[in-house]
Image (spheres, rainbow, N blue to C red):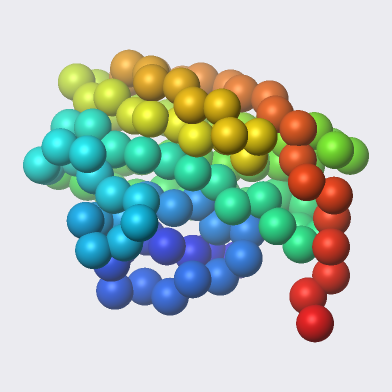
Length: 112
């Protein structure tokens, strides 16, 4: 399932949020120089992935659930920074390159 990519896309559970200013999660600086990634680990999805081409390069983010732990991989383009907000609320600011994070996930629930 894909989700918030740009301000005109719709929300779907399990998505990463990478969006422009009109959404809650947004670029922090113009031209994607600094942006926020906040995976939405919800429901019983085992994982999700997203890629977004920006003027500064390709942003990649994915997550995979392992019981009550989530592994989150992000790729930040050269000469940019990202704020990564983990499901447990921890925040990390990272520069360009590939990073892996681990965080505790909420218990899986069903949609109804």
